[in-house]
Amino acid sequence: MADRLDLDELAALTLARQFPAEPLDPVGLLEAVGPVQSQTARSAFLGLAARSPLVTHATLTVAHEAADVVRGSTLRGTVHTSTAHQHRVLDAVTRVGQRALWARTLLHEDGTRLADGRLEDLWAATEAFAADTWRTPDELHEHLTAWLVEHDADAGRVASPMGRYLSFGHGGLVRRPRSGGWDRQGAAEYRAAAAETGLVLPDADAALTAVVAMHLRAHGPATREDLAWWSGVSLRTVDDAVRRLGEELGDGLTVRPGPGGRDHLDVRDAPAPGSTGSARSTPGVVLLPEFDALFCAYAPRGRDRFVTAEHHAVLWSAANGQVRPPLLVDGRVTGWWRLNGAGGRRTLEVASFAGTRQPRRGDLAEAVSRVEAALAVTVTEVTRTRV
Image 1 (spheres, helix red, strand yellow):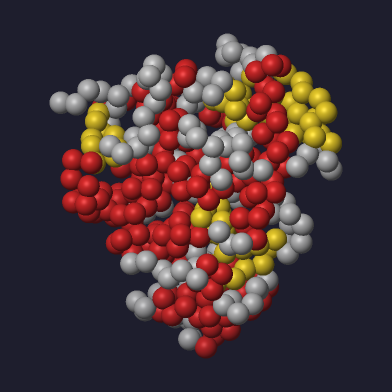
Image 2 (tube, one colour):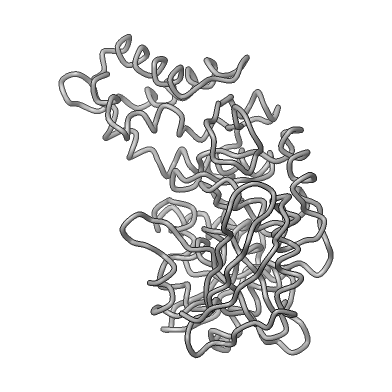
């Protein structure tokens, strides 16, 4: 039997992938570390800048404006920032994972579900409507309502918050800010991903296989539960994709037991940790964004490679689904941080959990400079607290 992985080994293997040794530009970094969950728009700027000095507010903005990097609702229906190529893969996977939600929300007047193929027709009609010009959420909602009326469906159901979300939450759309910077939470408008990127939608099975490989190369080793949670598809669908990936890679796909006896899948061509083989060899102090991959790439019980259950409960609010931006120290999440104020000059508070190493001011210098570069701000004061 293969040697059992412990939490330190899991963390070291993942951190070697999430913090590449060589500086990478926004597109290259996203290809290496995977899409960034970013319903908070600034998360992509902060998360990528924390991992490479070549990512700044300016360089990521340029990549967005060129549509080399795009933002849209994909995995689990949450907003992700990705390369144009990644988005098309995620889009195809999202159509599988979100199909049941669409089907139970959009019904015929008699309460029966739309027939097979009707969702594809609706998605295609939405993309055609948003192909030649950017559309507002109101325009997309009016289009969805009209389509349902035309096809004898219950248009009244889409007046609900969920129905309105489906108007613009289709994976085949990408979004941009109507005004202000790409790191701002202002109003958005939407366009068909195929029109904006010039890329076709891949076959669903091929996309599912690719997304499993994408996750393992960026976040592995991972359990099948991690893969299912992150991708938003069923365990059976994950198992089928893993089987296909195994046929492609042969002995390039590995399985090792880990904590709790759970099998962890991995790929042999992923970056290896430093010579110490320990998470302690990773960057000392990093200020991560909300919804960072060190949290969101894993099913909740798989996050203990980076954070204790007690600290996780403090950082992740079950009431509203929000996450405090995590503080990473020596490969472990040991607190959170907050940027205060508005405009170009801000203050920064760093809170460390009791019993963890509190970073010294000198330890924070590089991390603070990455925040400044990501958001084009100046941090005028840093305070450190214990919580």
